Length: 298
Ligand SMILES: Cc1cc2nc3c(=O)[nH]c(=O)nc-3n(C[C@H](O)[C@H](O)[C@H](O)COP(=O)(O)OP(=O)(O)OC[C@H]3O[C@@H](n4cnc5c(N)ncnc54)[C@H](O)[C@@H]3O)c2cc1C
Image (tube, rainbow, N blue to C red; front, side):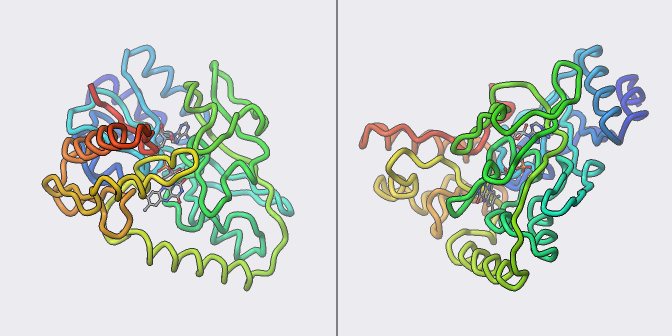
C-alpha cells in the first residue's frame, strides 16, 4: 500500500484502480487511480488536507448519474459520500439529510411519513449532494423548491448556508462555480395524504418507464433544454434519433438520451454529442448546452 493510501485509510475506505464503468450509470470510461469513502465530516476534512499535501487531484462523485468520464486514466481520487454520509433526521416536516443519501430512497421515506414535496425526485437516481449541485428537477419542480439550507465544507470550515446563497437556477447552482463540498441539506416538505403521494409517485414512475430508455445505462438527459424549446426536438429535426456509433446510441425512445447498448466507449458518446451540437448549430443557430458533465477530458 502506498504512503498516500496508508494515510487516507485512517479516515475512510480507499480502493485503487477502479473503472468508471463501476462509478457511473453510463458505464463507460477509463480507470480512477483511487476511490475514497470518508467515514465522517472530520475524516473528509483530513482526506482533503492529505490530498492537498500530497498533490493528489480529487473530484467529488455522488452516484455518477450525470457524468461522462473519458476513456483515459484519471491520476487522482474520486471521493464518494454515499457509503457513510447517509443519515436522515426528521423534525416535523423538516428533513435534514446527509449528502450521500439516495434521493429516490428519501422520496419513498417521505411518502411513508405523509410528507409531500419530493414526489418529483422519485425517479432521479442521484444522491442529495449531486442533486443539490445540479438543482435536479422534473415535472416543473426542482430541489430548490424545498431546500432551506445547505451544509458546505469551504475555506477549511463546515458551515450552513442559505438557499439564496446557493444561487439556484435551471439545473444550475453556485456549486458549479465554487470548489465547495456539500455535506448535508435541510428541506421543508408539506403534510400530505400517504395514498395521494404514493399515487402521484406511481404515475410519475409509469411515465418515466413509458418515455425513457431505463432498460439501458445512460446519464439521463444529455442536453439542457434551450430557451423556448426542447433539445429532443432539435435532435429529431437533424435526424439523429437512433443514430449509433459503435454501442453508443441516441435512444429511439427519447432522443435526448444517449444509451450504452453494451460496450460503448466514452469517445463514441462524445462524438455523438459533438456531432449533434454542430449540426443543430449549423441548421438552427441554436447552441445545445450539455446537462451531462464531462470529466477527465483533455
Ligand atoms: C435514468 C436517469 C434519469 C435521470 N432523470 C433526471 C431528472 O429527471 N432530472 C434531473 O435533474 N436529472 C436527472 N438525471 C441526472 C442525474 O441523476 C442528476 O443530475 C443528479 O442530480 C446527479 O446526482 P449524482 O449524485 O449522481 O451526482 P454525480 O453525477 O455523481 O455528480 C454530479 C456533479 O455533482 C458534484 N457533486 C456530487 N456530490 C457532491 C458533493 N457532495 N459536494 C459537491 N459536489 C458534488 C460532482 O462533482 C459532479 O460535478 C437522470 C439520470 C439518469 C441516469
